[in-house]
Image (cartoon, rainbow, N blue to C red; front, side, top):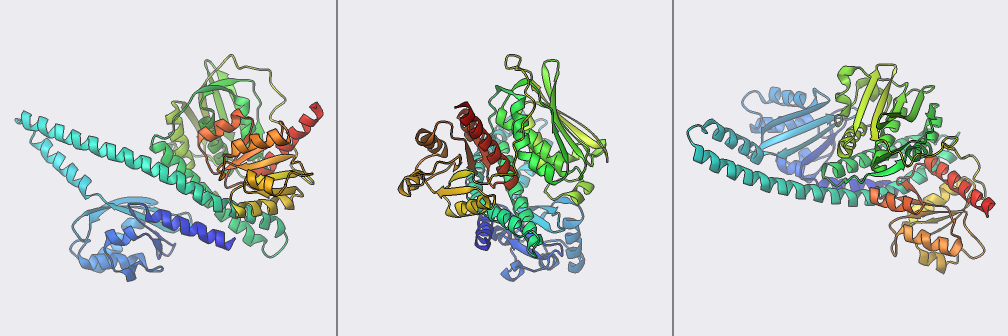
Amino acid sequence: MVEILTETQDSLRQAIEHIPQGVAVFDRDLRLVTCNARYGELLAVPQELLRSGIPLYDMALFVARRGDLGAGDAISLAAQRVQTLTQSHTTVSQRLGAKGQVLEFHSARLPDGGLVISFADVTARVDAETELASINQSLEGRVEERTAALIRVNSELEVARAKADAANRDKTRFFAAASHDLLQPLNAARLYTSTLVERAGGTGLDELAHSIEASLTAVEEIMAALLDISRIDAGAVKPAATPFQVRDLLKKVDVEFAPLALKKEIDLRLVDTSLAVVGDRALTARVIQNLVSNAIKYTRPGGRVLVGARLRGTRVRFDVIDTGIGFNKDQHALIFAEFSRLEHGARMAQGLGLGLSIVKRLVTALGLTMELESKEARGSRFSLYLPYHRSLKVMPEEGPAREPTSNLNGLRILCVDNERAILDAMEGLLGGWGCDVRSARSLKDIDKDGLLLGWLPDLVLMDYHLDQTSGLDAIEWLRHNVGGHLPAALVTADRSPAVRALAEDRGITVVTKPVKPAALRATISQLAGQRGRKRVEA
């Protein structure tokens, strides 16, 4: 597992090296933890000042003595610069660099007291702004010159916009590829750690195992949030509206969050409904999942989270209501800003404050309306309005059924993934639950190793990106050879709506990597229940 964590850290460092801005991370004592090469290049400081452990003040003192911070006492200027970068939760500032270029600095305090600084050379932008201001001051009486200048500026802006769009597309492709490569070892690490947590109960390693699990969860949340923001801002999110049952969203919420709510001793209540709506099923589900996750995160043990929908005229209002910490009206706009967290929320739970920022972006992309009501220390209500669809209305069920998750002993599970480390970790976790597990890296290996000879799986957990074929096609092959009603779940790091839609069309559950053990266990229980019902019907 240490090797997997090391590989993940190396992958993250390599990803940071591809960022065009200079990036550096400092610990709570404002000593350098790491930085990319671009940071040292733009700052133009000696390599000895880029070593781990160097104080931020030493860097500031060096550039002050060089004259970058202007005239005056270098010691005072350095102290003032450090104060500027650290005085607020987030800061934005500009100053001249060693070569006379304009550098724009963004700094943000981390939950553990550390500091992240990123900066870029914005000389071209500042020069363009200055030039444009000069042109504006001399426009009167020079109509022809003004027209020519505007045409030229518009042309430059069009070129810049085209470059920005291309850069956004490149960034999206990079994050998509990087996320898959990084999530694969992270998924294995999460599975190994979950097995360690279960086996370390009552031992001296118990606390350490939970700490590792919490750290991996934080990394997963940050990566997922950055990927979502990148895709939305680049325009890669293309909503496709179709009619669907609200009950489908409630079932997804139940599977993903019921185990977490139970663990936190929170009463999660899902109000069943026969209502149907029109919208993008996958993106709407992402909004609701973020809202429910936020509600559970900021509700104390013994509290309640209610999820349901009701008809309001020609629209359906989907509510997520909690008895959590809440906030006052003056803070409504603040909670939707990136890297913004309220002080009492930051003390209660870890995070970077990206969840509601993603919700706001998705709601805007979907063209929907969202309401917010909250009272500090009493709770909040987030309401999403969706167009009502009459023709899909059906008789209500008894509610989102929760399958028993306690006994999986003897359940035969086939795991297919092209990463051996993930299979080993999955075997360890499922074996600890009493399951009879067999694994393979491809359909070819299943046939070569004779895994299905005298042994038929009750369900299959399948990766999507296999070497020879897609996981969806592999499931179809297994169903053809094992039985058409073989329950299956697609376990994938690919979070695109297209893959989820393809899976749902074939009646295949989707579990995203890194896998949450509690949600995986609930999914397996539901799939096992499907298998049992099919046998009874047969």
